[in-house]
Image (cartoon, rainbow, N blue to C red):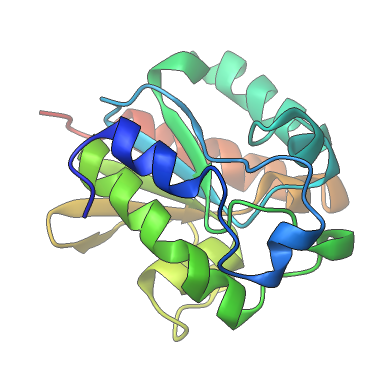
Length: 183
């Protein structure tokens, strides 16, 4: 475990732990409030994120920002990251060895932030954080508590682009997060 953000960020800046480093433009570490009560975790960067070095700035990110604005969530007050920090080729799912090479960075981010709620955006985040036995279609919208952290699995914003009906679920799930009894 890293004791500071500086130490953690320095440890990743030249990362070559897996083959994803070969095609990346930028490591997409994460952005937002490092004292956030809420963390949003997706699967991995897409092309826009890789180019700009920031998570959720492409079409799915714009949709997520719209949902944030609609609900009064300030993007600068939450923290946003991904399971893997480099873009998988052609936006494919991250492979097990890639996740294993990267997951400790995410664990350290969570340990340094100490959030009360983690929103898991999609199947990849859900299964790699809470376990392969979880199915997003069954867990979505239900609170899961582990080790004092409350998890809210929901659809990945990219899924909303493919299926308009999921937008209602996504908004309802974020409303549950906002109504959480924060300490």
